[in-house]
Amino acid sequence: MDSALVLSKTPREFSILMSAQVERTYDEYERMAVEAIMREGAHRSKRPKASDLFKRPKDGAVKRDELTDLRKETDRLNDWLSTLRTDNGRKEEANGD
Image (tube, rainbow, N blue to C red; front, side):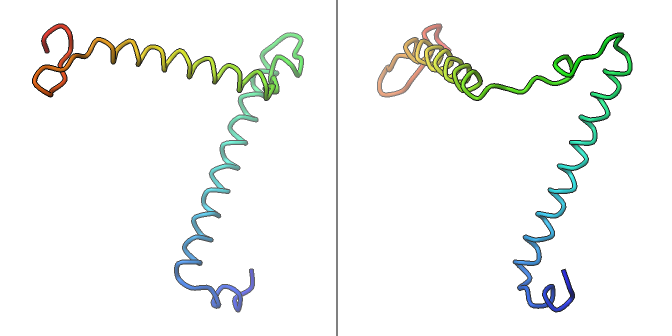
């Protein structure tokens, strides 16, 4: 970005641009860290395969797992909420706490 373009930005726009650049740098560091781990895993294994180092997630399977997890969590919370009772307008747990 040339100096005229930088100077034409408001302080808020400039701050947003700088924050975005910092986040891009962190993303790059994170990718390099993952790459280093994958390289070391390949170096230590006897017969490395790409599928051993990285398995691309399937969109449908991930979403389906997330939905089942959310459903289980919702059921668990509903069970917990059913143990609550109201006495004189306030909620208490069934064990008297």
